[in-house]
Length: 252
Ligand SMILES: NC(=O)C1=CN([C@@H]2O[C@H](COP(=O)(O)OP(=O)(O)OC[C@H]3O[C@@H](n4cnc5c(N)ncnc54)[C@H](O)[C@@H]3O)[C@@H](O)[C@H]2O)C=CC1
Ligand SMILES: O=C1O[C@H](COP(=O)(O)O)[C@@H](O)[C@H](O)[C@H]1O
Image (cartoon, rainbow, N blue to C red; front, top):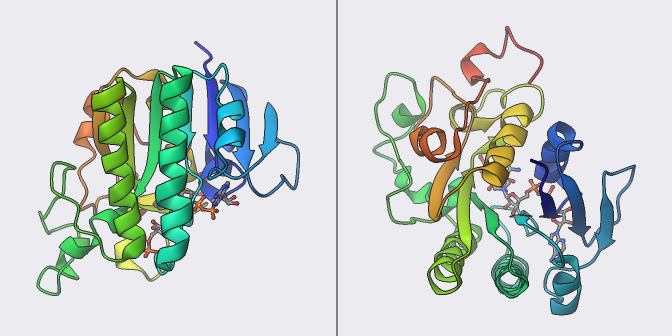
């Protein structure tokens, strides 16, 4: 059934991957501080997620929020992640709870757990013969201040689930790259998320029933060190792409 979905950060890469696959599947309201450069489905609101009034207005009549807006740079400075990623995410969760939204899917990141990639484990853990696997039950272990902000977003989700009953799924997205996995980058190949699997995964987040979940958002790569079992079980995620097959598959 079509849902009324608010997509924050809609003008960015992940937003466009989602809309590229799902434009006709849901009723979209899009919010981004940057105006769109071409035609977009639904209604586009130019607004900042740290502006409470804009977010509250955008939240009216919404069933599901996909919250992507934020500073995505692993090297982002503290003042930016504090404002855009932590304060902005709190504003989105608070407005969602107040508006009676049912579900929020939050774009977390591999960098929330990047420090598990110790010198002793790498580069072996990026290779298919290695069995090291993170499954989403481990504690955050951020690799930078950006990762700290994503761990904070996951905690905010936990709080808004426990206190207000919001259904929340935190998707620790790997490395979204269009068309093919990153080249000459083992880590990126292990955590590759194709555009088509990205759209499908967030469609699953819109449709599935859950309480509070942390899942990994990667394709079904042979090399993976993130388990996608939880995403399969709870969300019915069925990825189609695999970085090991990229030479044979140009449709991702
Ligand atoms: N692209 C990737 O591989 C990964 C992305 N993510 C997360 O996914 C989300 C989207 O990332 P991308 O699409 O790659 O980044 P992007 O930079 O392409 O898109 C982010 C969008 O958010 C908007 N935005 C930023 N701050 C805002 C604010 N305060 N108010 C309103 N709009 C704001 C920007 O204008 C931009 O259009 C981010 O939260 C990022 O941390 C997480 C892991 C991997
Ligand atoms: O969270 C993110 O992760 C991806 C992958 O990280 P990288 O350090 O391997 O590049 C990154 O490309 C993206 O910008 C970021 O938001």
